[in-house]
View 1 (cartoon, rainbow, N blue to C red):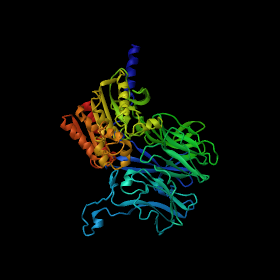
View 2: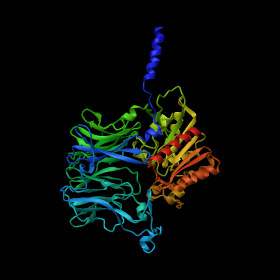
View 3: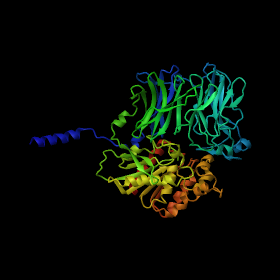
View 4: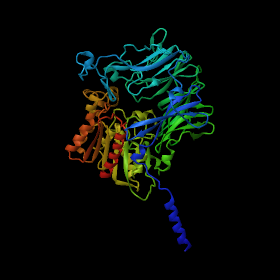
Length: 634
């Protein structure tokens, strides 16, 4: 009798517990997003923005806060710009630099034919006619400076030049800075025009003297990317450098010019730097880089005049990504971090104690109500006996005695880290919370596993890395909790290419596919993409070069369109109308082929989206269609 009463009370107690939710597309689009705006002039507080999606308005709203870096609560700001240190103010306070768009070329028909002001014509005589999601209409952002005061007239330091600063399409205020003596402006530009602009990655750092009006190329000897210039407290200039011309994913190193010499601090280190920040004393540099499926914090010393060899040291390690370095404190750093189950928040890290303190909690209430997936780190042996890291994301309340449908996630890039990122589209937490196991392999081509592993994929798109995908899914399909009859493959960009390619070679492994903005025909991709340096390097060159074996392999053996006759599996194809990186013809041609072959297929066309999905309502449609398709086909 007592046992029966105990059981009844136990059941009642369980019923009284609040029911936990799983992540849904709707909940994902309630997650708030943090971005750090900068520090206050004294450096004692950081200013950050919290952005919240507004689904009904198909927009976002933002609120701003100031947070003391040495402890204390955040305070809301009504005018954040009034308390934010202005990095565009010269150190001596006499000048302001800024950027704005100026008309340099006549591209629009109405610019040339003044009497035809209603024409929509656009005329081009060279490439770089469109980039990312915008057509070139003859306007270029330039850097200006002026005296700090009302009514001062600005001086265009790039007068008449058809070049960009900040760099299009993603550059910002980090592309131009003052020298410590306030006499010069350093700025990043790719001074290539038209067709050469589309073929080159040769951005350089230029130094403009505000007294003489003279400009000097500081990095003229390097033919790859030079970017992110930053001065130390001692006046030494550092920047990120890639050496290989035309290779956007080359090893990225920290180079320092000081004491009359230029030194590459990370040349001997087998990794690639994503972002850096000088240590306050100028004797070392903190940086972020991919390592073993995460993005972590490192430090490299700057020897100065000494001949001592720079030494790279990893500071942080864990199942998370460090996404930014905000400020230095007396005992550590303020950083932003995220993981596959949590969006970005701000943390304080103490070096001596080796611990984190979470400073912002904008999504704590939402996550507290959720049952979270489990993220496991696995290693799989590839067909060439390499050890490959694979992230495996298990549904909430995972039961190893049940069988689950499983998704192979194919990463884009192709040289992009598959780390502990938190995406608002390819969100593993969301996928797992709908009852799917997610298999995310760190296949060939990804940074974080050595430079050779990263570089292997170039000109080998359909080669070893496709076998890496199959090795990963085969290893997991052997597990008793994976339903080997319900496997799907999903991905975007190069991941979309991977889906298209796997559809022709998978040998009945997969039951369904989803490809977003994927390369379907490498030949037409070469003919319509905006950045030709990318396809020249990764595909090996133009399709008409019959003597180039690597290129011919890319356009024949590794071209998904040549394997369409072997397609037979249901496929959902997503295409953005303003995607000029992987243009619209790729998705439309793939859908047309699937339809004509009689394959169950759908096309989700997003006319206002580029290579990504940025509008809240479009993003929610994307998520709903993604999971509706899986319900129908998997």
